[in-house]
Structure formats: structure tokens, C-alpha cells
Length: 128
Image (cartoon, helix red, strand yellow):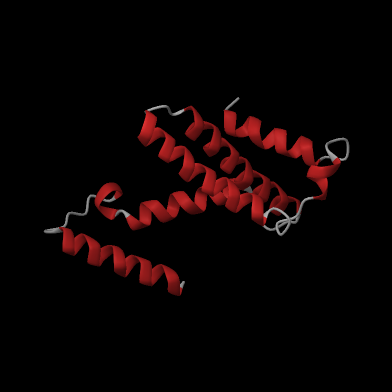
């Protein structure tokens, strides 16, 4: 079993009737502060890595942030909005679309041309 699937099962168990009352009571709104806090702690983990070369804190904090993402995705699935798979597909599609030079064999004559292409892709994406 992939660890991402295990994480999803853990969150689903926490949210289940026989799971944790605190986790079941959470909403997207109630977790906003925790999501921001975990993102800030990732930045702290990056700083620790840069200062000490020790990646353990960054690994832990990335896990905590991933838990927030999974928690919101599981709640959204419960609400019939979308799934974690939808989230992963959406960001993968976006990265492929924004990087034609990596995924579609497009070449650019200069960094400026690549940047202009990226800006056009972003502008087009924001309209759809």
C-alpha cells in the first residue's frame, strides 16, 4: 500500500463514527489556522535545514502540512465536493500545462521567451 493511501485511511478512520470526536468535529473553517501554522512550520524546517543540514524537522513539518491537505480533501469528499485524487490530478495537470518546455518538447530561444509563455499560460488559465 502506498503511504499516501495509508494516510487517507488514517484520516478517514479519525473522521469515522468510531474515530476521534475532535477530528469528526473539524470543518474547513475550523482548520484554517492550523493550515497556516503548519505552512509556517515548513518554512522553519527549511531554515533549520539550511542552518544545520538536518532534514528531520522539515520532513516532519511537511508531513504535518500534508495531513492538513489530506484532512481538507477527506472532508470535501464527505461533502461530495471533490476527492484527494481530484486535488492531485488538478495540480499535476496544472504543472504539466505550465511547463510545456519540460513535458511537451517546446523549446524557447531565451529565458524571456519562456517567461512570456508562462505568463500567457497563467493568464489563459485564470480565464477558464
